[in-house]
Amino acid sequence: MTQARSGLVFEEPLLFERSRPGRRGLSLATPEVPQADPADELEEDLLRDDVEGLPELSELDVVRHFTRLSQWNYGIDLGLFPLGSCTMKYNPRANERVAALPGLAQLHPLAPDADAQGVLALAAELEDALAAISGLDRVTLQPAAGAQGELVGMMMIQAHHRARGEPQRERVLIPDTAHGTNPASAALNGMEVVEVPSGPDGLLHPEALEPHLDERLSALMLTNPNTLGLFERHVEELSRRVHEAGGLVYLDGANLNALMGVARPGDMGVDVMHFNLHKTFSTPHGGGGPGSGPVAVREALAAHLPIPVIRRDGDALALDEDRPQSIGRVHAFLGNAGIWLRALAYVRALGAEGLAEVTRCAVLNANYLQASLSDVYARPHRQRVMHEVVFSDERQQPNGVTTADIAKRLMDYGYHPPTVYFPLVLSGALMVEPTETESLESLDEFVAAMRAIAGEAAESPETVTGAPTTPILRRLDEVGAARKPKLRWTPEG
Ligand SMILES: Cc1ncc(COP(=O)(O)O)c(C=O)c1O
Image (cartoon, rainbow, N blue to C red):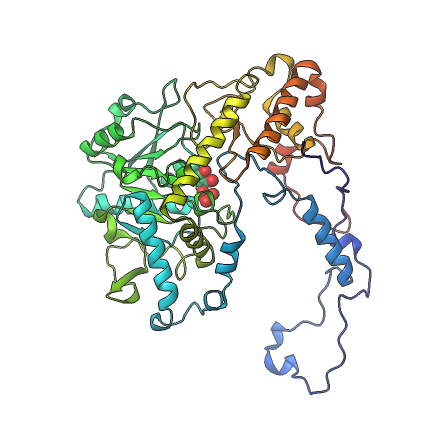
């Protein structure tokens, strides 16, 4: 059993509170060579005599503060991280080494194309790999996150319809099992979002599209596997009907770790899709920050790819910005090269067979959890799952134990809580994604913790509703933290 890390002190004053007047981080000898006077170099209004209010500390104070904080953090390097939909999987160290190679990490972003042939070749290689994996024709590495990839995809779809003289095609159909970023991205692009209901089996059925298959249809935006961890097995028929009505099919391909190397979205009728490199290709999490969400498209949409596009003139590669039908620039330079280089290292290390094995293991691990826990936690859908499994608190509710309680209690067992209350279509959802990187032993330890909690919920519910017991701050005012965040410290408190 994983031990709760209760030996740690979960309380730490701010650096400002530790500050002592006159304490310094480092002291340097007075230089023997004459120093430039900043006043000679800078305009007067850019100079100030003193910086007020910054904490004054020794180097050791600062190192200890941040080391203690780092020990509070739960990360994939510490244990299984069951956060469904977020795919918290191990980031292989080899990828880090590759991205840090001086020839890549220190290349100046404004280096002329002729001096950057190596990195351009790597970008082109990853584009080709993603095209082969998706079954689509062209790829851009520009978007900085999955959600930005969605926005780029929607902009390209819109540009495609407009270029064909059908500007009225602005309606995007999105099933109620979609990831929340999908409607947000379509709406951000000024498109009309129409939610379509999934069936009782958690899948989208072709008939649900019927009322919307008209000249206003722009696209179906499908997450497959969907957020219930189920494969949308009507995808080919859904695509056929959308195409017949003049629309395009967008795939939220963030869950590609359930398909990669085994099935290709392009073969299922998908026209545009994004990849979440952090979810599928083991790069560190970006959370919309320094991530990467490449987009793949059919050739028919290639003219609208964001600039720059890598132009391949024989052996010489160049960044092409002269593309009148492009949606424009969505990121500086070549996207987040430090991230997509890691993904390329992962693809190269595993090869085609290795990537297919990743998929098989991700699906096997999720089904192992489903089979090991379905007798104690309710699951509304009977199908086998893909890469993640969604339970509910239906069996625990009669004893007053909710999904939130189960998640908090898991902290006492030494785990980060799983994703809770998502997807919204299932009341009390508790979504677990083990990922392919977990061993049988670590899955068994997690199953033991989940089963122990189910036992407590039945026999001593207050143990679960009173959790967590290990941290000093136990149940926080989560709504207050989100609605009225206190982000600024003042000496008065
Ligand atoms: C299914 C799905 N779609 C879209 C996203 C959004 O990706 P990102 O967080 O990179 O913007 C996620 C995030 O994990 C996801 O799981």
